[in-house]
Image (cartoon, rainbow, N blue to C red):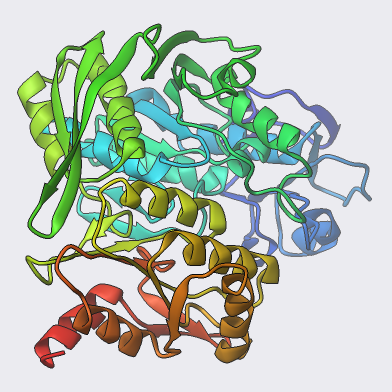
Length: 486
């Protein structure tokens, strides 16, 4: 591919060299420089690719893309753009021959519900015969291949590479989580989503290295609705009007509101032996009874979102109902059957906001006791520990304080911080630093009617201690405990 071919759809200023040169690779990581490549100089939080111009020349790169003045090496083509991250997205789409044009693409943004919604959509569409790829917080799925995720929304080059693989393997659809960081950093530029989804918005990801304010966070989320053909949004969220301000797409709404295009009516809680769920009637654009095996009001929103998307694919109602009843997401209110007498679940809730939402939801099922087992990560905000301790102390009947990913901190020091938050409440607690032993205690002391939540790890299958990740999957721990006779 020549430089003029790969740059055909982007704006740039030619600073040096010609456009007819062939390039052998597209590179944005200086450690992967190869002769004949086009090197995009990305400025990150800790490293600036512009500092590697001389290295790129020495290693035989054919061309550079820069966003600021730099010393121009001899014999190279140099293009200047307004933003190299945006340019990387556009170049990546061209390098992989615009694979999104061969897929129906669905982007889901919002503070909560993205992961569950994407898995529900995948489940429904595959029930209807659509081969569906997924990109998200937990993993990327392409056919039978599962690739663990490093970021909710990968770098633009990786997204286009995944799209290419999906298209080549016969996928019809890609559903993906779209983070505010991904939107801010132009990771989803270079193509237009067929459907853009907004779930909800709450203050999150605000601070050093993330967003400077809630207003910036909201503004980044809103960018999705300038990058899609059809927007599907939660009408009940108070921030919805601001999120779609300046939209360039058609808009459909869902929610509990009577004015929503698709709405949930007659919501009922469902309980069974060792399981919880919810049922309701979908009305408006669709009309049928829905039941899911995931509890709570947010489960209604997640499933309603999935219905709002999948109706565009003409999925038969019975297939949609069956898929929603069976849909499960690893680590998101994931029921693990250990007894008919009480309910045990694993959930990723790892901050005060998500833990409060989860425990408040479970309270609605009137458990005999609500038991919450959790720890907090090391080398992270101590404030999070205080807040999570206070939330659990206030909402759970019993808190089991244990270890999460201590990283380079003393696990007991983290537990002491959690107890500081607990002290603001009258909540009962026990502390058991070893997570397996803490889980053993929870199961051994489970009583009829209890709901037990193992919070914080969710889909993670490791524990990080002193810079080393050791295998630790709570599902395996539970199986070991049961095999050992508790």
